Length: 71
Image (tube, rainbow, N blue to C red; front, side, top):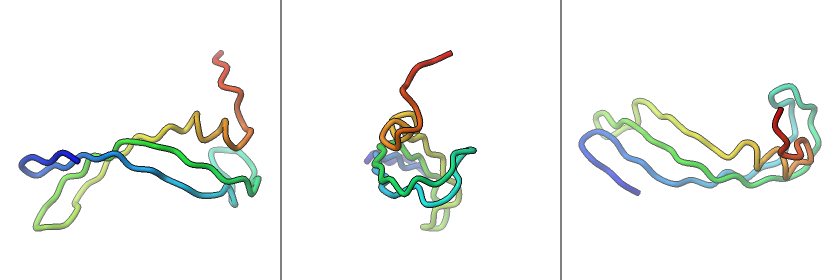
C-alpha cells in the first residue's frame, strides 16, 4: 500500500463465482480469482472516490469464457 495526501493505492485480490450475467456472459457457477490495483481518494477519513483495474481477461480464462486470443 502507498499513501500520500488524499490518495491511497493498493494491490487487491477478488474471488468469487460467476452466478449471474457478466458482460453478456451467462452464469457458469465456476469460481475465479483476479488481482488488480485500486486507487482511492480519501475525504474526512472515508473513501470518497475509488478507481480499480482488475485482470478481467485472466478471470474470463479461468471461467472458460476466453482463450486469450485477440482480434
